[in-house]
Length: 197
Image (tube, rainbow, N blue to C red; front, side):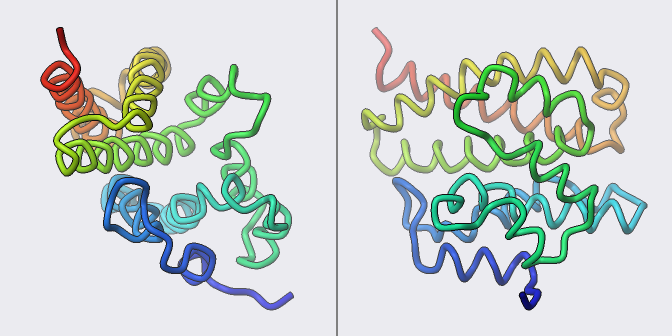
């Protein structure tokens, strides 16, 4: 099997598919996730590449396993190393294993960085969707309610496992938590505006 880059793989797989509720390419979402990983704050180039590849590929197995893009196939296609493969496996949501999903991710710093970046990107897309519609569609409301529940767990796990990193302004967690808190507050405001009593 010939190797490809993570970026080429996501562009090939997602093609011209659009993000739900938006006039935005689905292949742009992983690029947003990379941005919110704050890789510029890392000094270890090997770790930067690992985070970059996993941030780009974080949804591929979840979205395309039914088409044969298993963890093993993606590993072979992109040439992922063992640490990247373990990290990608950890951040991939699997049916029937939702209960421990967030706890597993937020026990590993690199997985938590990618997941926080993904949640920020998802929340920002949801905010754009709600503003565009000037309200919550039924689907947008369900997504918001899921995020609201999960964000409470995420904030608690970050504080429990990474309090020192959150307090370090040079660590990605410090910036990520601030952004996610602001996005969660804006979604709450929009929810109250459009669906409040």
